[in-house]
Image 1 (tube, rainbow, N blue to C red):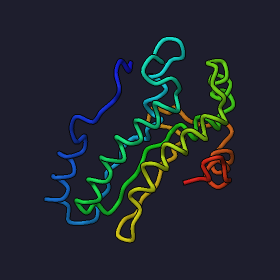
Image 2 (image 1 turned 90 degrees about the horizontal axis):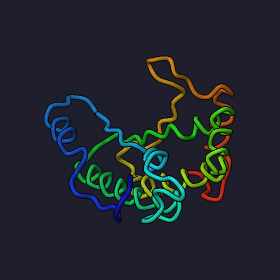
Image 3 (image 1 turned 135 degrees about the horizontal axis):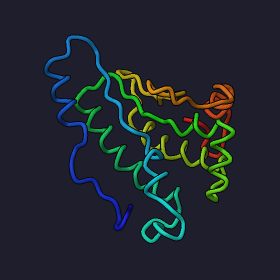
Image 4 (image 1 turned 135 degrees about the vertical axis):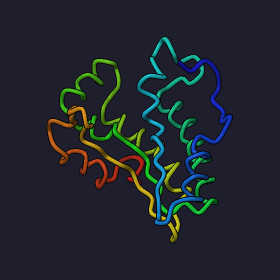
Amino acid sequence: MVAAKLRRVRRVSRRESSFLKAHARIPYKITVPSPVVFTKYAYAPGVRDKVYPTRAALAHALAHIIRDELLELVVEGLPYIQIDAPRYTQLADPVHRERVKQEGWDPDQAVDEAIAADRICLQAIRGPDRTVGPHLWRGNIAGRCWPRAGMIRSSKYCSTPSKSTGF
C-alpha cells in the first residue's frame, strides 16, 4: 500500500551490478520490473488512492524511480537492460481483460498507461553501446500461462501506435 509520496531510498541492483561487473567474463544483463508491475497491488480506487489519485499517476512516479536506477546502470556500463513487463500479455488474455474491467479499469487504457510508464524508463537509457527492451512473457515454470489468446494481441500492443506511440 502506498501511504506517502514515493522516493528512492537506495539502489536496488547495486549488489548484483557490482558483482557482475567484477566477475562476468561475457556481457551480462540486469532485469528490473516495469513500473506497472507494482500498480496492480499498490493501487485500489477509493482505498489506496489518497497519495496518487490514479493508477497512471502511481505508475508515472514509479517510472521515474526505476528510470533513475537504470540511468545508474548505464553509467556503470551495463550492456543489456531488460524491463519485465508481464502486464502486456496479461492484458491480451480475454479472462484477465474481463477481470480488469470488473475492477473498474479499462484494459486498453491500462496498456496505454503501461507503455507511457515504460517509455519514461526506456527512452532515458537508449544508446549505441547497450541493448534495451521489455520482456513480454507468457507464463512461468509452474505452468501458469498467459495469454489464452496467444501472443497475437500482445504483439499488436507493441507494434501498433497508441496514445504513447509505442516504446
